[in-house]
Amino acid sequence: MAPAHRGFTLIELIVVLAIVGLLASLVAPRYVRSVDNAREATLRTSLNVMRDAIDKYTADRGQYPDSLQELVSRGYLRHVPEDPVTGSRDSWQMVPPPADSALTGSMADVRSGARGRGPSGLPYASW
Image (cartoon, rainbow, N blue to C red; front, side, top):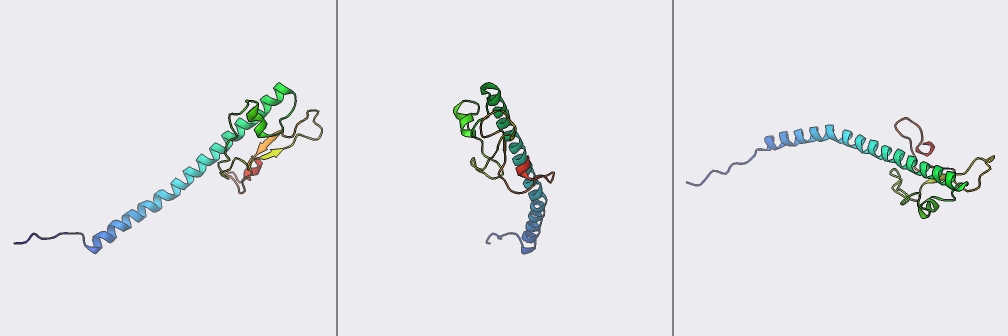
């Protein structure tokens, strides 16, 4: 007598695939949202670190830096961080000093070069 071959029926496979699909549809939006939240938190942290370095440079040298690379070469930053929204180190936008500033230099602040809006509705470029 030959052993009976047992397997899954088509109905059982369809039920399992439906359950897997349902679970994936519940988990995927939460995963995407958590990735977006992490990216935005990283952007805020990078901006705060670079702004702090600009402030320290300005206090130490009595002038604004000319670029982010100058902050790196002078030891105020280890490296120019990557903009987590654009994925580039070159997308940062330099904000010039106010016109009435007595200090020299080219960069008083830095902003993200990313397009789009954050969770608060403000454009990333205004953070």
